[in-house]
Amino acid sequence: MKQLLISATLLLGATMAWAHGCPREMKAIDAKLPSAQLSAETLAKVQELRAQGEQFHKDGKHTESMAALAEAKKLLGM
Image 1 (cartoon, rainbow, N blue to C red):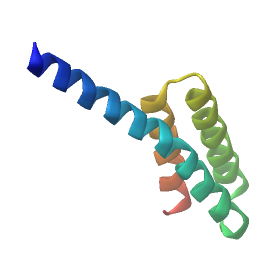
Image 2: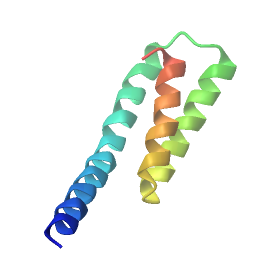
Image 3: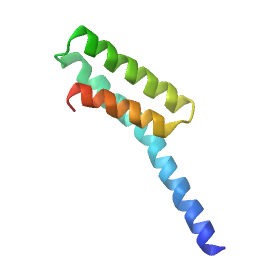
Image 4: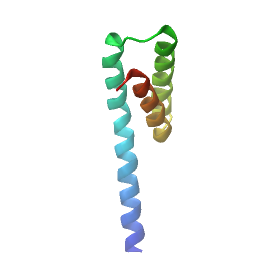
């Protein structure tokens, strides 16, 4: 029982860490966008992924949010 409680606590803590990582990733993308040298198509894709990441975050889907934001950062060369 004690191990189950510890595991649940660790899982909750990891989920909370992911949740708080999303805004940090969005800020990093926002800071890089003005100086990014991207084609119009790539810029549109980055903006779309960033918006998806924010929506996933708001919906509580933090794994999906971080995946979308990571893809946006990759396109930005971050």
